[in-house]
Amino acid sequence: MRDEKDYDDIPGTFVFDADRSREGYHLNQFCISLRTQKARDAMKADPEDYMSRFPMTEDQKQAIRDRAWNRLLELGGNIYYTSKLAAFDGITFQDLAAMMTGVSRDEYRDMMLHGGRPIEGNRSKSEWEKK
Amino acid sequence: MARITAGVGCSHVPAIGVAMDTGITEQPYWKPLFDGFTKSREWMKENKPDVIFLVYNDHCTAFDASCIPTFALGCAAEFTPADEGWGPRPVPVVKGHQKLASHIAQSVILDEFDLTIMNEMEVDHGLTVPMSVMFGEHGVDDEWPCLVVPLAVNVVQYPAPTGRRCYNLGKAIRRAIDSYPEDLNVMIFGTGGMSHQLQAERAGLINPEWDKRFLDYMATDPEAAANITHLEYLRETGSEGIEMVMWLVMRGALDEKVTEVHRHYHVPASNTAVGHIILENHA
Ligand SMILES: [Fe+2]
Image 1 (cartoon, rainbow over the protein chains, first blue to last red):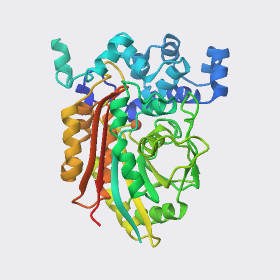
Image 2 (image 1 turned 30 degrees about the horizontal axis):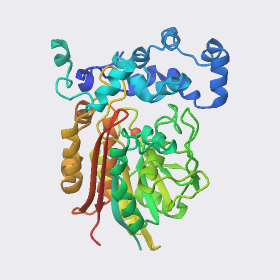
Image 3 (image 1 turned 30 degrees about the vertical axis):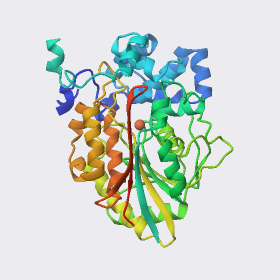
């Protein structure tokens, strides 16, 4: 369980704090292990066997199988770790961002070319609830 | 005596490295970004640093989740570019200045900043991308034009050190370098930022007004920048915008009054607002 934090009010954001780091430890260690070619080969050959080397929760393993990118963050993953799993799949950082925001890669790329997501209306959860 | 002649603030987006490594910097998407560094590269040639003290963060590459030092000083003879999941960047090995690094470690720790000492460390795009944009293309078999003392700051697991703490650490680094007997032209780089969020539904957030004010603060009001809270960084600049605390280490190591010689701001590079500033100390 987490205590309430002053940044909980920021919408669409998982602040990777010590609580999330504790919950996501083995998930994140799994992701970073994919940094080596040997690990990537093992993961490719038998994903279930490779995942079983890390004592993750069943929820975390399922989120990996589903490539449920936001769920991975909710379960304690950090983006710099989960992006290693994305890189394993051949997904770039920008396409991963598109997936997490629920728009197509072209739509996301276009938003960035036009200055990105504006700060107005995106500061607090109450602003998102009104939408 | 060694002296810090200038400070450089610079974003370190991985896609910028990819654009340089694959030779697509002249494409319309990238050209305006790289045009802003033409002057910087000339300035680097004219001002030839012997050593760059480079403040950056590791993006879960050299450090995994098992060990998260807040400030880690690279004291090794060399630092190899890391494989971040798609092979290491084709850039030269980074050479350290070991004697200067040990001097800084000793001075700064006695000055009450408890650094972690890294005698072996790989470096990721956080360090190599600023080297590439400031020095231009260098292949694996080339050498970087100067030595580097890296300082890796934790900005991944919350909380990062406060802006104020970083600013004060910069002052301690200044005292350390000022007391080093060898004649050295040292520059300090603060890297990362500017506004960007890479994760979850709010990914893609950019806040140009805020970023530009931060650049103004770097030039003329570092105290105001040092007062920015973590909550403000997270809310106003995106969850990854908090990297900007690393610019404050750079700013703390400079004179109170500096001369701004160059500034560049561009959106986007992938998911990120790119900011860049060059500040000179008065001789
Ligand atoms: Fe970074």
